[in-house]
Amino acid sequence: MEKNTKKTHSSSKKMLLVQAKVNNKLKDYTFKTEGGVVLFEFTSHYDGVKLYNKLVEMFCSQKEKVEVDLDSFLTATNADSETVALLVACAIEYASVIPFTRKTKPDTKPSFIVKVSKEFKAAYDAAKNVAEALTLSRRLQDTPSDVLYPETFVDLFKAEFKDLKNVKLSVYNKEQIKKMGLNLLYGVNKGSERECRFLVVEYLNNKSSKEKFAYVGKGITYDSGGMNLKTGPHMRHMKYDMSGAAIVVSTVLALAKNKIKTNVVALAPLTENLIGPKAQRPDDIVVAYNKKTVEIDNTDAEGRLVLADAISYAALDVKATRIFDVATLTGLMSYILGKTYTGVFSTSDKFWKEFEDNAFSAGEAVWRLPMHNDYLEMLKTPLADIANSTNAPYAGSSRAAMFLNEFAEGVDLIHCDIAGTGSDKAGLGLSPMIRALYLQAKNQK
Image (cartoon, rainbow, N blue to C red; front, side, top):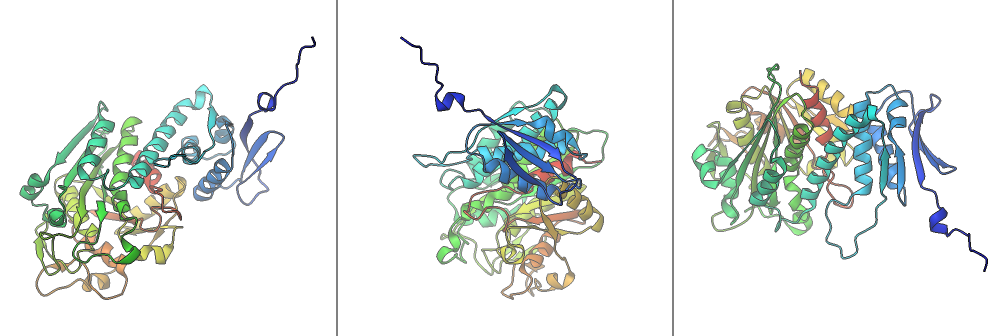
């Protein structure tokens, strides 16, 4: 009997190989498939935002298991190899992982085998830690609010930070929050049966530096609007209002795993904003952590309230030299910048330029928006030091930024409003600013 030596289609099919090279004639990054090789072509000019977007497009377009020659990406350009590794690792992770789903038949994703030499293995391992932290943050964004609420948010990160060096994790419960005088956070929590939490994660690993960055993230695990109840479709996707908290704590997690020489403290004020018989009302006046009195104009402007207390705590107790906050703060941001840019407000031209450079390198598109005392004037009230909002339809995002700065106690503030960029067009979490904040801390002087 003659032996059948014919190979099946599946056994003879060769795995695609993804490689990179530079092409100085190109004006933009591109990729093409030729003879079993997916060739990614770099331009001579580095553009982190365009590079990351094109990498995501290329990796997402693959259909089956693909082999990636990482060394070719890191040697095809004069750009910093650790930064390029970061973008490649995050793009692969985005293309290959579904952070959260309860579909009985989940969608299929391509898979990748990354080939990396000993020379670049450490850079890739560090980049992969950031990519996995980003996926963790995206998973928390997509998780329903009946599963993810202040207590479970804290428990998850307690487990993640366990056994990591140079980390101190402090958790304050509702009673402690009230005693401490974090009354803006406490007030937002009044309508919810689930207790608020204040999570502080200190990662101090650079004794030679006097710098200490505070990363503050809005942690509203569900936002109904409170007494100013959201109407119609506006309550949909409000589980994403904790995105800022997930982003800043996940960033510090990546820094700690990679043992980066830096000093950063993540602060996450966590609560639901719900309607109820004990809920905070418009016209209430609350004494903030920094002793300013705040008149509640609108209970649906709650994010700035919890951030204000956390920002004051960062300035007064943490003794931060700079404060960065991340928040899905104003729906207006979607109209201003869409899903292309994260709106950034900064009290310092110098520090804005530094942050813009780090964001650009990390492939994060940011656009600076104005802070001006005219916007603060709109928040004047005869009964308290400041109102949390106004029904005037002017410059809502800038007003919110000016409100936050009133609680920074003179410490320079960079406020990132991710209301537009926090999720994709399908409504799934993207967790922007993790790569930017990671590089900001990594490059701390």
